[in-house]
Image (cartoon, rainbow over all chains, first blue to last red; front, side):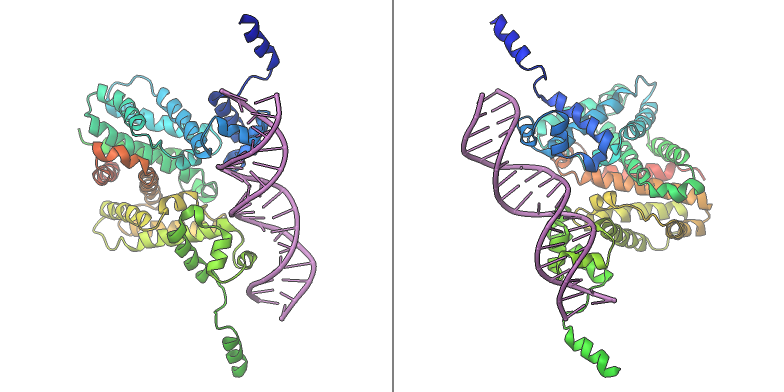
Length: 194
Length: 194
DNA sequence: ACCTGAACACCGTTCAAGT
DNA sequence: ACCTGAACACCGTTCAAGT
């Protein structure tokens, strides 16, 4: 049995496919070719495999994008860290979101396109996980969800807006993106009543 | 010359193509088949023409989407109406945006995907047109642009979020989309300093 | 000036067949 | 269990040729 395992290991020097390797490769292709270049055939090629092989591991391309978006949000969420109160947390989360979107090529577009899972249990679980730090800081579950939805919407909308490229051609002269984002986010969070 | 014109008119009972007819047909196809179904061949078929014919009137598909988005924003802008002060105007604009996005199938996704024109003169012109009502209500040009960018970002992000479909599967039980949007928008506008 | 026919280089996805 | 080969039904776009 041990030799069996060993045999399999040496017989496959290029390790087998799995979801994680698939997602890492997808991020690599995303960085190299952008979201429009992220298609099944190049992704398969990156993994040394044919395109249909991918469908053994994921249902369809939409699932791939969903999994990638989950990575982005997990990263943004992790970067927030400890905060003194819920307003500080929301501010940190908003800034972290914008930074994280920008840290991937086409990051905002990716997350705007990605669909949420249609599994209800999965979704409710994530909703609670997401709201948890705010609840710990004294907000009710429903206000936590509501405020967080607003901050995510603002950050995602802003990042889509900003990623538009040609916006910078003129807006850079007329106002600062950094400053305006900060102003908007601060206004939003300050405006939430206690 | 008159008979010449008349001859052309009778020779072409199905009127010639132009940008406006193209855009109307595009909205028709959008409503019928959704954004994923809005492709060049069905659009051409709707107009009784072959797909390459469209390229005589528009540069590429991106231009089509840009023109469609312009229609959406013009409508949202027109629906705001007269307002007493700039805060009321921004509130009205935010609500109007959400309504307008929702009034077209895949409206938010369409506007999120559509690129801004890369013509600088065109963009500066629109920036000033857009900021005008706020400037008339006492805001400086730069603050008007900044605040409007925030409101658009929030509304677009929210609409993308909300259009996600599967979000409703759980969020409908845990919070009201209408209420939360209203809360967020009000917070944002209230938070802007005078 | 405006449109067609045919083609190019792609897509996502399915499915029998291989190992 | 996991992957290949071949195919299907599409894409957006170009371009010579027609009228």
